[in-house]
Length: 347
Image (cartoon, rainbow, N blue to C red; front, side, top):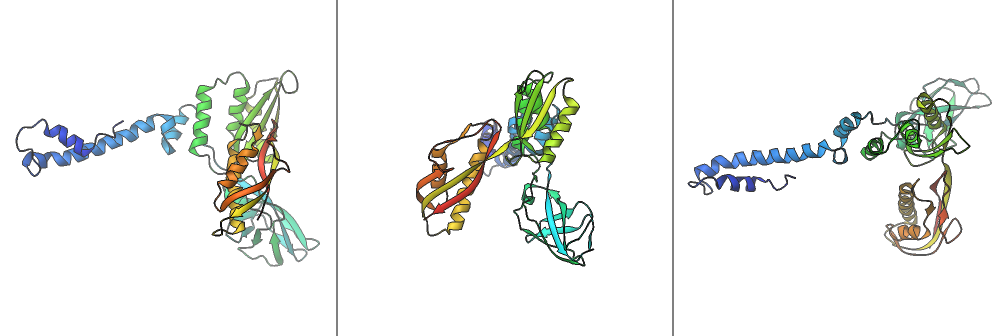
């Protein structure tokens, strides 16, 4: 709004009000120049103030303050969980809170004390901090930052999951707009959506009223990584809705079921990239696309996937594309979330 109020414009306007000594280097000019600069800075700050007044142009703490006026607060992230197997001498005690980590230094702690028997012990672990970076693949937690006498090795045989980041501005704004633009009253579908979205780790929600007869409601959720939600998140949504739902409603909460999208194609590769790099680039493109259509589109487009492959760095051309073994769109069910499965690129 005030982007045209530069120091040059302001100087010119002030100098127009004088008739003498207003040439550059003159007394009046030199007196006005610093004032014009400060006024220009003030107008720049006014632009920022104006942006922060409105939720759709504000960010950070200012968006939080605007959302708080409507009872909407930024959600914290959640910690990834999983299991590790300790191998060692029988009778060795692994205390609760024992640290294990990946080669890159991402640390987890055991959630309970366990004793090694039959030369092994399996125990639940939790990340030491929130964040999706703690969702690590199988066989990557292999180190003990603090050695435990009697332990030979440690490993996670399954990937860890359920780690989510603190809610970003886009998600917070979306919940605020749902609150103020969509009527949520007396336990209607919008109310259930708002309640579910208030729970940390929930990324999106679908509500099915009367799904199993009168008085029934089904709430299907995904996590904030646009993946199927963990049982912990589902349980938290159940508890939160139970605190708020109308008396008499029978509510079922479930995670969306994963629908794997398997890709196979023959590519012409740019020799500046390795095949592994190209596969990673293609996987990233398709994963981001699938996240963008969750609960919004009822199919995964065969043509769109081909376009994404061609648009990936390191791909010059492609042919023989199949998606889930075929050459047509893949239907996504009402309670499904499309996730990238296997990516096979041949040369």
